[in-house]
Figure 1 (cartoon, rainbow, N blue to C red):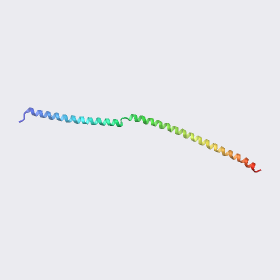
Figure 2: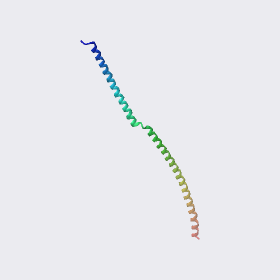
Figure 3: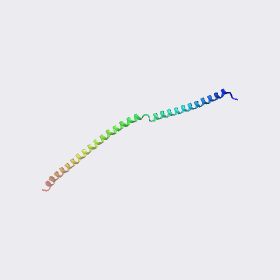
Figure 4: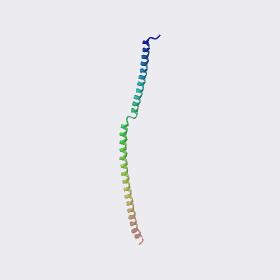
Length: 106
């Protein structure tokens, strides 16, 4: 026969064992979650620094595009002036060639 006091001791030990198992599982789950958060922060937590770097690079790109546009407009002006000078040079050659031809045929 069992004593009435021994059954309560067994129930208490089972209850404390169940509480201990759930506490262990909770601690393991908490450690796993904290480890995941730590790893995630280490890998992607510096997004603020990356955003700042992207903003700086975008600013540099905008400056380079403005410089490129300025140089293209300067090239267009130089090409226009070059064509105008070539046209004047051809006109001058034509005017100089006509008197030389007239002097050679007297």
